[in-house]
Length: 203
Image 1 (cartoon, helix red, strand yellow):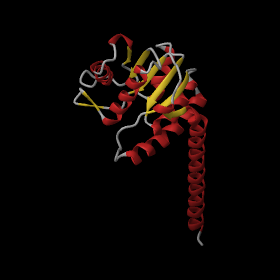
Image 2 (tube, one colour):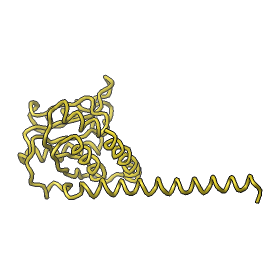
Image 3 (cartoon, rainbow, N blue to C red):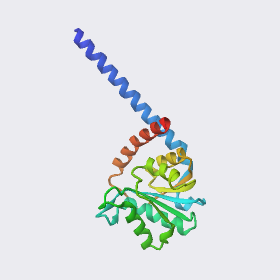
Image 4 (cartoon, rainbow, N blue to C red):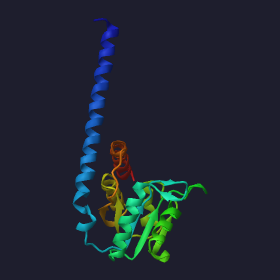
C-alpha cells in the first residue's frame, strides 16, 4: 500500500471512530433525558396533580388563525386540565415575531372560544423554542410549578428544560391525532435533546 493509501485509511478509521463516538454520545444523552423524566410524564386520565400553571407550547398555525393538529391536541388537553381544576392559570407560549404570524393569539382565541376565561390565560409572545419558553416562564412570568402539555416525544425534553430553570413540574401527554410525519418529528427531537442537554451543562 502506498503512503497516500495509508493516509486515506487513517482518515477513514478516524472518521468511523468519530462517528461511532458521536452516535454513542447522542444515544446516551437521549436515554438520560428520557429516563430522568419519564416517571413524571403521563396521560391525562392518570394525572391528579395540582400546580400553579398549565404551560402549553406552540407548534404552528395555519393562515394566522387556525392551530395545527399538533397544537389543537395540546390546547384541548390543557382546556380539559383547566376544567378539572389542575391549575388556576394557563401560560401559552409561541412565536409572534411577525404581525402575520401570531401563535399565541391563535392559542388564546381557541381556548376562549371553548369557554376558558380570558383573564386566566397568560401569553408569552417570545416562546421561540422549548428552552426559551421555560427560561421565560421562570424568569419573566415567575412560574414555580406547572403541568406541561405537549406530545409525548416532546415532553421529555420540555420537562427536563423546565426543571433546569427551577420549575417543579410534571408532563401530560396531548393525544388525539396520528401524524404521518411522526418519524421526522422524533428524529428532530432526538437531535434537539442533545443540543439542549449540552446547553444545560454550559448554562
